[in-house]
Image 1 (cartoon, rainbow, N blue to C red):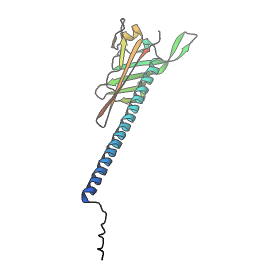
Image 2 (tube, rainbow, N blue to C red; image 1 turned 180 degrees about the vertical axis):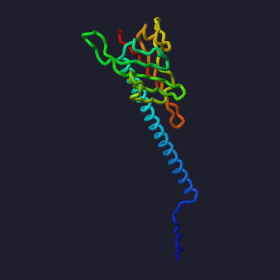
Image 3 (cartoon, rainbow, N blue to C red; image 1 turned 90 degrees about the vertical axis):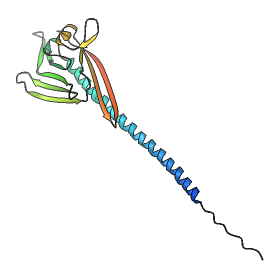
Length: 193
């Protein structure tokens, strides 16, 4: 008589099962970290694009406004933090002079709030007819060049003599404990008187 064969069931041991769970856990942790890093890179990339767009928008607005004025139209209290001027609306060919807008355009930098505010002010009434604020500006933006070409803080004399305005817009943002900065510079030539 033959002995019955023992049927051995094949199964995983506890050690093998724990090893598989550990390997899968490590694999999922690595994938999760990669996804988190990708999401952070995406968020920071978008924030940098927004920062650059806002900085460019402010610089473009400043340049456009400044190119439509004349050096003599700047207010006497022009400084590194403040400019105010009237823009040219047209030219009177019979009288051979400029026709000026009925509004002042004013830009002021506030170091405490780190903002630049653009205001449109009626010349006769002094009422503010429009106001826009740009946030997260890290330094005063208005400079000029002296006769040797060095960049100096802006004053009325610098504009009258050199008719150059150097704009330096430095902005910043903080997202998820990462500091982002962006700067743009442009030199604007003011009209001849």
